[in-house]
Length: 199
Picture (cartoon, rainbow, N blue to C red):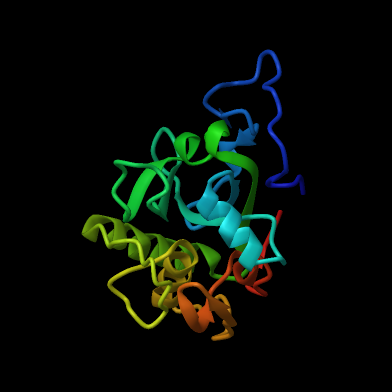
């Protein structure tokens, strides 16, 4: 089976590539994406650098959940206050915007590895979409106890938890950060989940 996506750096589009199957300079074949896939990116912002400092096990600093079905894939994710004027909340945006070159240097996709993956992925996508409709705010305290404020990895974890799968088996990272001490869910926890696979 051909890889779903293993791309670390932007690649130019080849002459003749179909625009409807390729998204942005990363050369992602959107025909291979499915609703419920997790899409990770390595960001270039200060917030992204701080995440990477806290998570030495990952080269990715942000994650969202894909919605596929329209003419262009969408990503549900938590927009942090890294850009002035952008509301810091759960939002849905086009994949091309999510991985736009000025904010991303690397991308990868993970998919649920389960006999009923489509069922669980669909339920997780519904949960994530509900968070976006409610415009749940960004959780700047990174508190896993609160359900009315979310950060990126928490959004994906909670969406799949509502679907019936705990992607991290209840195992969180304990850290002391400027935000305080506590349990955190880092990108590497999801990247290394036994329930996910990279094609």
